[in-house]
Length: 161
Ligand SMILES: [Zn+2]
Image (cartoon, rainbow, N blue to C red; front, side, top):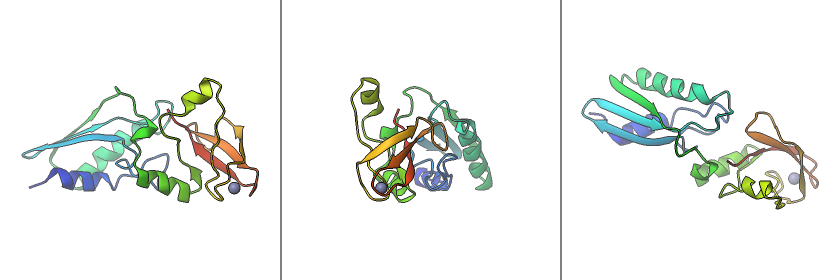
């Protein structure tokens, strides 16, 4: 018999296509898992609609369920409420920092930017808050490119939505 925990464990093996050091569970993409007898149902909310990786998330999950010989499964995509960086786990934020990507501020802080309030993004390498944005778009559309004024390293900042 397969338990819901088994399915969560299987899904933890699916890397986020944008940030492979994180899996789809840590990203908060998997919203629900339900197991009724042999039937497995997974509900996901993909990240940024602007990301080209969005479609591959569902395909990757279907593939891992197939690989694990789960006979009867369905992946449902729920777009509302929209995915937000607030759903990322603390462990996921810490892993981002260790990868050299500044994790998103809590509470969708980019709204503050829209309202014209200035905020500081700490450098993931030296923790300096003396940083400035070089470009709205970093290595992918989900990230902005920043540069640290102290250690002079450029780094990606994972934008909040
Ligand atoms: Zn720095």
